Every structure is written in structure tokens, then in C-alpha cells.
Image 1 (tube, rainbow, N blue to C red):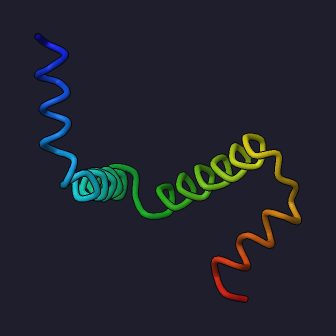
Image 2 (image 1 turned 45 degrees about the vertical axis):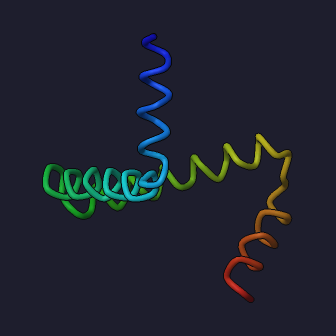
Length: 77
């Protein structure tokens, strides 16, 4: 019974998932900016991005050259 309610709730929210995700993301970013300031937030985001890139490289067995090529293709260089 509880599982059905949970699935129905998730199904109802599915059309709004990106609005929920982006609103939450920017709310957290605003909180960080207000609580710790711009510089510290920027450093935190840079380190989080580096961690994501390293994790992606490890997950997909990428080397640095293939990562650079994928970034270039996304940018259009």
C-alpha cells in the first residue's frame, strides 16, 4: 500500500522533475552564496566540478585526451 502511494506520487511529479531539480540546485547555490560568500562558493564549485570529472573518467575508463576531445566537441571547437 505504501509502495503504491510512493509510485503514484513520483509519477505525478515526473512532468515537473527538471523544474524541481533546477529550483533546488539554484536554491542551494543561493544559500551557499549568502552563507559563505562568492569566493568560497566559487572554490567549492570548482572542486566539485573537478571531482565530477575525475569520477566520470574513472567510471567510463577515459583518459585525459578523450576527455579533452569530448569537451571540445561539446563546445564546438
